[in-house]
Length: 540
Image (cartoon, rainbow, N blue to C red; front, side, top):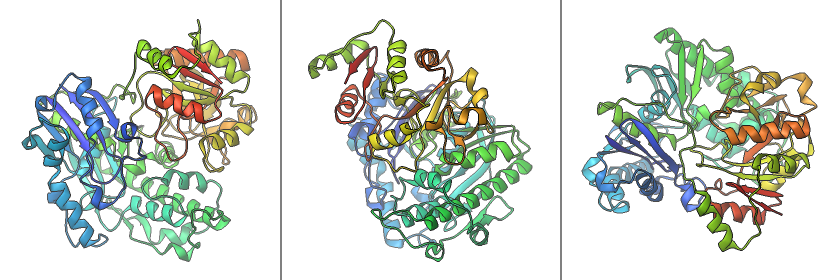
């Protein structure tokens, strides 16, 4: 089967293509339109479809819209319960009406597509499929938690022979994701966008409100939880975006983060007891909380925990496609990696450089050239291969720097226009990671867990050590990413440090760089010393 998956209803519109059970391509619309998160997360934007991402996915396989056997749209308007507590009746009806028209919106965006081939896939089922069907090993328990789907905010179940058996779900208005979004907005950040900032801020606070919060935010022992709307002003005053962050705000973030972790731990313990499985896969926006993920992996009952790298709503495009492929009888293969987006040949990149009339060179050894710049404390923009699907920069669209200079944390946050409390991450070869980091799944190619930095390394790589002594590391397999591994080896030879700083190649308010032109634009506007664009380099 040739199955196109689409996410469009809430935020982060995306498309994915699965052909004969194999993932061919996946991309978020923001990478094409350069509009952060693709669209506004509001009900009246549900008509907007990821037209550019979908068209590109089909082009990758040499298909036209008419060639598609099925389209999975990751939301089922028939499951919406109008008048449900915690939803706005007027806006909910509008969203549902627009969702029902999705087949015709898609057919308009993709001429030749038969709207009759569009099938609605339950939102949390699409999340679950994106985890369990895409994981390296099939079957096992699955936990989905996010803001909301049609009428629920979570799903716990087990996949056996590629089929989901649902064990529990949580009805709205109770939602771990919505409560975290409420906190994000209360702290002056952007809802459905900046939740990762709250997670970072939590490390600076003391969870002194956790006991009181836990009375209203906790697991209920049956696979569900209580998490109704809260009056957060009881704990700390609301903050406007331009106002300074007070200790009370950090304490509230720490308290909510702790309650989230404890609730998730209770949920996975219940799921393990219910299913008897040893493996757990996770998806949904909550699964991007790498601090909670580490506690689940380290303290929970499962032997193996795998998290979908595009765990947010974008990943439901992939899950919807995988679900329909499996349902149609295809033998679904694990996703080959997160590098599922666009790429350019060396010749295409050189044409861009020539048209831009910039000086460039093609060094004999790119890894050594980049390592020399990092060793001299230069910042490198790294653009290689296919772009990443999901929010993490995983060595395809990255900014790299020296980890041994403590001031590089503030320097990179200034380059990107980010808040000073946000950490940057280390990138390290897989065979060296256990020397530097402990706790959690330390071999972490998708940067979805945090780890304790070994005491003997904290002073040697201060730029990547968060205030709580942790780091969100990415491990590099030399077989899968040989150039990246060679660069890390060359950096170690030049600096005696086996890792580099890695953060996404973008600046504040903009999506991650996706094309050579985007890379040149960012290089031209930000204080970056070297651009490694395919086999070529451009110097400041």
